[in-house]
Figure 1 (cartoon, helix red, strand yellow):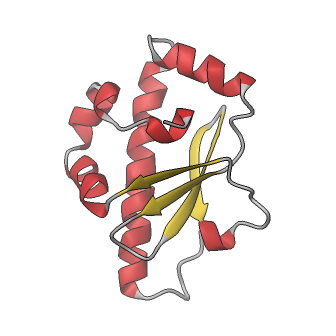
Figure 2 (figure 1 turned 90 degrees about the vertical axis):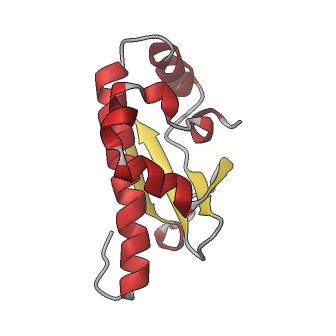
Figure 3 (figure 1 turned 90 degrees about the horizontal axis):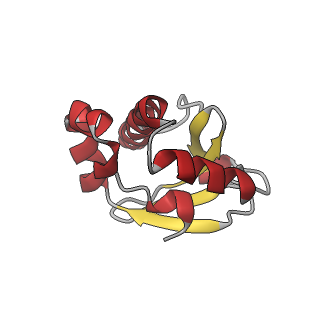
Length: 122
């Protein structure tokens, strides 16, 4: 994502979602072969998981798109997606994202603490 043309408040929101995604990726990397993540990865591969997932941070005006593939989770501003055709939507809050970012070790050591609803459409 390119942040040069965005305000500082937009940058901090982008930093927050990027930090959250980095924690998710680290948690996934350490858990890829463990239950239940092994099963989740398998199901995602069968369900065309590379499709975009719309992520709405409800207490801000920003919407993102998550993409999941063999490399992990990638994120971009939803406005920057060309024809991304999101297959599902996940709504979260900046408070939740901040809670994870402020205590990353707890979530990386126990990935089940993370909210994975966006991955499987809950």
